[in-house]
Length: 198
Image (tube, rainbow, N blue to C red; front, side, top):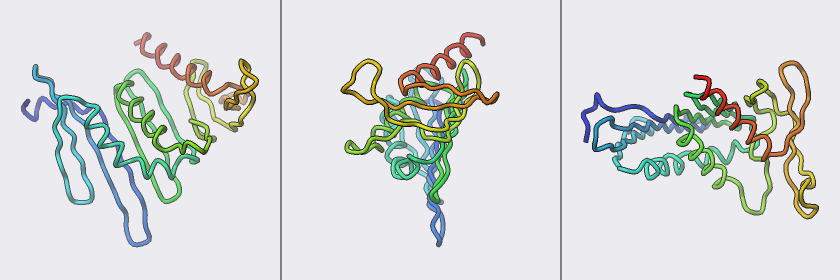
């Protein structure tokens, strides 16, 4: 295993739950080693306690983070999320219901792995919810948008299927409507364009 100076921080996450008698705070930092025997190290801080986990596969350590964040994330499903996607900075922040979650990484694959798994674990199979919460801010290739509404509509491709359609407002107060699939693709296109320009 590499010396501590060779560690590179690749993910930060925090999940906090505020009670009348105190706060439950969980903080996670995932590191990779820069040496040839590449390992991953996860630091988990709960209150005053810190534990370190080591593994060759980052997914194993990310699953520990997901297990620690999923309960707070479930309570924030309907809360507006601030999602930022740049070529070297990917961040989600949500706060409400006496809870707060932050997930931040410089690597899109790591960020998406965490978010996608949290979404899958948080959405009850008998409950249909939009993947991206109303009142969230998102970045698209054409600028920054605020999600005003999301409603179920008939799929344009299949009359027996329903999809979420989002109403977005640009900073210039222009309205656009996108299905969930279209919105996610637009967000990915923004990331790819930003990455290519750097």
